[in-house]
Image (cartoon, rainbow, N blue to C red; front, side):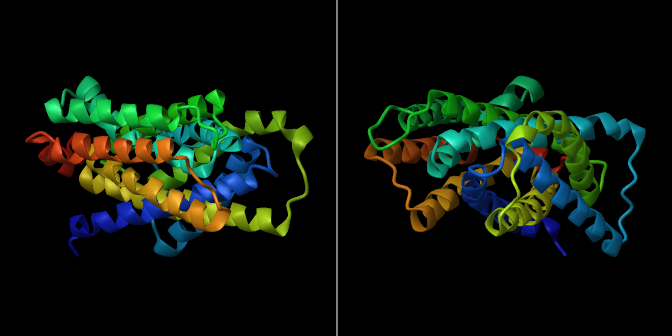
Length: 302
């Protein structure tokens, strides 16, 4: 099987599930504190991944040399990311949050320029400016939007942490199996959540059936399956190319929020979203430099 040929399927599947996760988090975080939710979905994901590894007969043992990078990826992916995104979704609409996370591809391209020396070219820089201009329109005050500055700060921080997770995972993907990376990152991230959830103990409630179903969806589909797919995408295509699939998350989230939650964006936010997505396309697709694709396609030789 040509695994690189099906890499787009992995990327689109992960982005679709993560796009739907914005709605699930938005509904659940109203009943469950943010870090408690992150820990619950992490526990479900780790249990599911351990069972999958057992049936797939994949050895989850890791080398000591990979321990630090897996811990780093887990800390970025679970306590840091979910602290920011869960709190952001408590203050903003799912549509707004997903559009701001759409900054990830541009931020990844610029980070590759800073840390890997890959020159993105003039079009990429123009796309970055266009994308940030779009985000500025999204967060502009508007009578139909909550306009929480703290919520926007949370979501921009979540986008930056996601970029750091991509970099950490890119290194591990060259040496470890996909299930192994996903399991250990999830476990280390779950451990990282424990100090935070103790601070939320006063707000714990008995979960309703709806909350339980959302936790299962977030843990099984979004934290386990989607993360597994996205690690595969990073391993096959490299960090910047894999990040392009994040563009699909706002599309799924905004459409689902419109159909399911009845969320509406103002005209300025629609213009901002379109501008941001156009900037992302310019920076990560039309503006990719020659040679960058070859580097990204062979991440097993960093």
